[in-house]
Image (cartoon, rainbow over all chains, first blue to last red; front, side, top):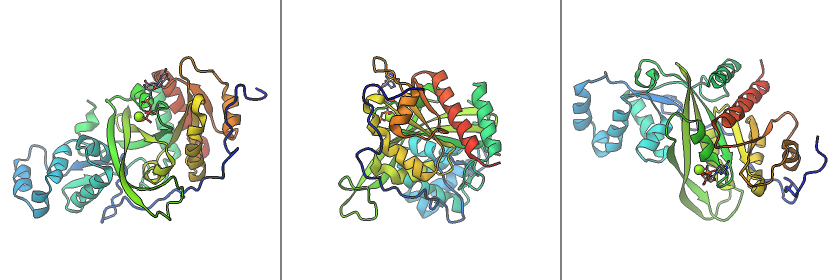
Length: 140
Length: 191
Ligand SMILES: Nc1nc2c(ncn2[C@@H]2O[C@H](COP(=O)(O)OP(=O)(O)OP(=O)(O)O)[C@@H](O)[C@H]2O)c(=O)[nH]1
Ligand SMILES: [Mg+2]
């Protein structure tokens, strides 16, 4: 046990008024049909692998896919399992924009949104998951 | 490439840890040290309150700005993937954090003893949000080496929260830090 800090580490709470902090919010980030789109949420295209009609449909498709090549790019990326954050990074699009587009695609049934480790996606990971993460990290 | 990446019939369980701290404290270094992929960077577009005000409800002038956030990945099992999100620690980006920390296991708060004040707002945030966190002092070569208890005292960190001295460049050190956080999160989670 040490007595007093050596040198002079500044002490938190010393000279300031407490910062105003927003409560941990659990709203937003949901699609119209209740899909939760967290940064780590996995999504994948619903089209069959190597389906040629997917391309045709997406090129000649609805107004929204024609005016939004981003939607096509997202579906193309989603031929593999992707997270929301990964799509934003690879397409160099802001997270918020990607969420909106993904939510449209999910509502149209073009992509499937998977659940995350928090079950319904709003709470905290449960003990079973934390235990699994612990043993996974120990194995590294 | 892992099998889960191409299997679209089922998704692995995705979980995440947030790495937060002041400017240049070593967040990207930490994520890079353990990630199995080259860390990716994404930008969150946000409305920023002008002036250094903490009050987000009263914002006379608002400007739109982008904040970079980087993330890495660790496949821990066939069906279990851990993401690490490095996020900026400035107070005015809190509203982005609300979104990023949602559903997270917890946070690693990185600190540099030469600029300890930089992590004060980050700590305030996690304390009030109730998200489990550990304090990790990223020790830079040539800077004075403090004892964890000295740092705990200066930061007024309660006894049950781990405070550790580590090196964000070393994989082993980062894994130990993550283990401490997940262990702590487990302690904080009711049976
Ligand atoms: N000597 C030493 N240098 C480090 C260590 N960690 C990070 N650095 C260096 O410090 C600089 C900043 O590290 P980053 O990992 O980019 O920090 P960051 O928190 O991501 O920075 P921002 O994203 O700009 O806020 C880089 O040049 C790193 O190489 C460390 O443990 N020891
Ligand atoms: Mg960085």
